[in-house]
Image 1: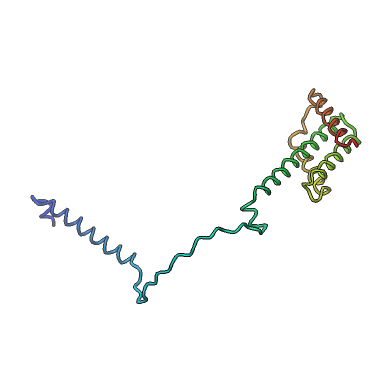
Image 2 (image 1 turned 180 degrees about the vertical axis):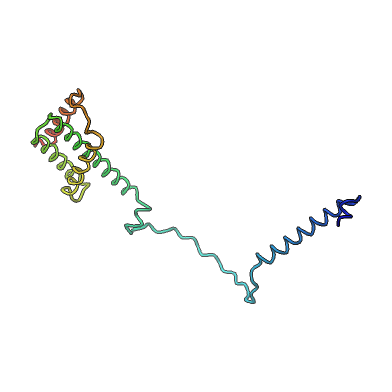
Amino acid sequence: MAAYLSGRYWWLGIAAIVVFTLLLFHALNKTVTSPPSSKKPVQIVAPKPITKPAIPTHPVLDLFNPSSASISQAQAISRTRGQLEQLLVISIILHQCGLISDGEKTNISNAAQAYAVRSKLFNDTNLLMHELNASAQKTYELVYANTKCDEPSLEQLKSQTLAWQSNFMAP
């Protein structure tokens, strides 16, 4: 082989090495990827017809394939919960700053609960209000505890909140 590479026919030596390497790879690939031979005749099976999947009626499946009605309901629930929590946070801020009394804070909470009942989105409004009050308190502690009570916007929030509460609870 060394004589071929050093002489005038060096390219034949390289060609022989390349051909030998390709044959070796081909032989190895064939033995590794060829399936075991079986004596059974091959049966051709007709493909099953494609059927449209049924609409899921199972609650777990509904989580992964919700209907547009359930999405709309979930969005309404989420939006209403957010609005009620925001109202309760505002009442806590106003109460902490001494801008509303205990009774006014209670009236705002009662109006929020009445709003939740009228929305007909929640099964247990007592539990909802318990959760919202706890969440509003945590939000106040984490975000609004350092609110300055001399902010001019607090008077506007007070008047808007009390107006909403009195209009909502009006007979």
